[in-house]
Length: 406
Image (cartoon, helix red, strand yellow):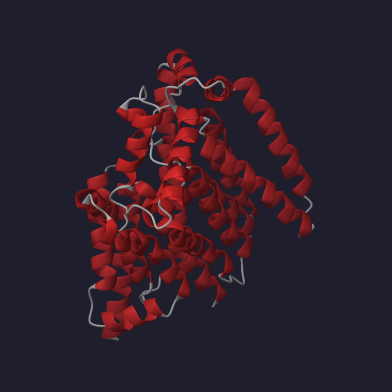
């Protein structure tokens, strides 16, 4: 009886720690780090840690995620800038410790996982509302700022790329809850936050979030079509109507598109651009040439230095703040440790696609594919927020869906 009571208390503490992590994600980097440490303390520091370590080593999904830290870690052997190398490895530590934590035997109930999903959606709604309040407080100036590669202020220290990714994940969670619900009233109520988040993503007009959103909805339409659901055609019409209405009524989306077209035209004409998409293309060229000249990479500590050298030689007019990291995770990992790292990174990020989920497998695949898209378009895993979002959401759904498969 005492052991059962201890397990219940332990699981409640872990449940609370997960919620604290999600709340802290939207508040500050320091609090997020502290909350992750709290979660790790509850899930790792116990007498059965060796058994948990063995389980971790026998679980391919967890090992594949941990590869995302071992690649930059090993590249320290040939990194010259050890200070920068240490910073890169520190950012990626959750890739080691969070999979180890989720390998534990602790188990939350399906209701608790659903409560976490509802809390996650609620936090996203609050964050979007704050962002929209900033927008409507100075709507004219912000609309004009979209012609200069600016966006609406967001949480996560104004990291609109990672924030739009989070909102897209919340949309997927919301759609999953609607699809899995047997209660018509609950499903109808969930449509309201879903519509709000979709509208917000169009107003924010962050490329990564919109590409991920439309990819998910298109795949969901195909999925429903094969399931012979009556509302599949309705979904397609709704997506098309949303795209048309967004272009007609949201100036931020129009101005964003105009700026991207203008920016890329500068790059095409050989004119050194200031920021945004053209600079991303230039950064990819820098990363590709670094990889070509260093087939085994330059080490995680020297990617930035090597990229800056290339910028100074080929684009001396670009300022320090505009010298972007190679804007794709494949390129970053390749520059760290060469072609072997490109292959390992592809395996690590693609392996979850082969993890079988008997129930709701479609949603699992969508989470992984959207994460891959984000990593393809951005340096998603080079920031604290990106590492946490990628690692936590995959492990969260893995633990939750496995419970439903039991």
